[in-house]
Image (tube, rainbow, N blue to C red; front, side):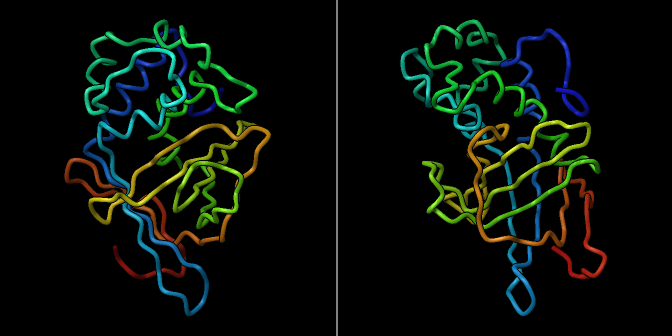
Length: 210
């Protein structure tokens, strides 16, 4: 990949872990409109160490041993106890037939913050309709489109069971399968990180606050 995406020979899994760890104290607050006279929808995306397991698609690698406690996964990645070489021992590591690749997902996670922050990223957001042919049970789909002919990135978002925040449950490059839903219009996107709030986007006609 080019553009925003990181380059280098660092272990991809470690790079994804380092970048994901930075997001644990970060929230993305998004306000959406479904159209005139519709109630605004507020989506606050935050990050927990246990989220990384599904973001990387590690549930597919059921022929190798991975931590039962998903909250410990990040620690094992950052300590190099689990690395690219270990994951690649799975016969499911890159499965084009099943339409997923773990290496590609690691690359996407490593660049997720850049995707979410960049002025050069176009956002299209949909309320998911589960007649989509997918086992991903998400509430929203964010489609990120970059310049320089980079592939579209799908980010699937679901409300957490324990509170009103949302988590990213999967993120990967678009391939042969397309997903859709009810179109939403982005009104506001802001980022809160370690107590500092930065407004990343505001629709010209939107005056409300989070």
